[in-house]
Length: 432
Image (cartoon, helix red, strand yellow):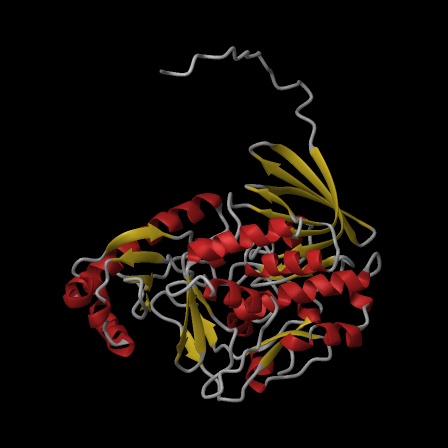
């Protein structure tokens, strides 16, 4: 028998003439951007006892880490043969928790360095559970409309969402937006490259025959020879295989990453077309592995370097190559210089076995404000240097560093904190 209808009253509503009042929230820390850097900053701040609000323009948490479908962590480990773990904190938890889920959730692959493949669905749920367990308040699908700055401090950030406007007042702020959106809207100086630095359109394909997966170098060589025949703009690229799942992540595309809304939308659609062509290439050139492969899903566009802050110090390629130590270092990595500033390929400059380079706090701090730190791919570096520290390992360490720097600053300035205390707190991410 069907359930009987219950009385459901409705009423007429009209938007007030003066506009809907904004939701007003107050916190100790407001983090803008919920990728690896922002998630790390929010989690670390909450563990320090801070009241945290985490904002993202996407309707889901995880940023590119989860939603671009790249499915791998880079820059967490050092180079062969020792493969030292250079970043701890959030990665120790992720490795333990996803590893405990069993095969198919986490896989370590060792080449010149160690990269970590992960199940993006499981990681997305891990992020969601962790931030809620720690009491982090989340605002999704919200973009910045206005930033109030007074007396060298960001006072409030005004956001627009489909559910109405939101105003967040906080003692400290972290710009982990990737595009320096918070710094930009605050009227702070930013860097913009003179020509595009290309991103990628990742896609996951399924029904891959793992017994016949091609050699990585041979596949790159054939792509360089045959890319034109398939309409692919990129001449080099890889398919990353996840053992035991019968899937692969395509990283064989190059797409522009403009900051114009119409151009950005066009680039996303063009990227999906490139991903389709990459699958055609694999089916035709390697039928034993890919004859039955089909598209499982397209990620959000993977943006590498777009716009970034102008900080107290710009990290340089020479400092990266020489492994320059800093008294205010917050992160380290051994990842190569990986600059995608040409449509057909990219610079790939690797380092030796013992190499480590660092990110200083002064490259995360705009000079004109006292309560803002950048973390992730919008910190200050010349294009080559930034290309080597924008990967997930050091980005997570930067997020943790930003959390501790804000906690040490309190209501004072991030430019005047006790660096000895900061280094002590961040020791696991700075020393073996």
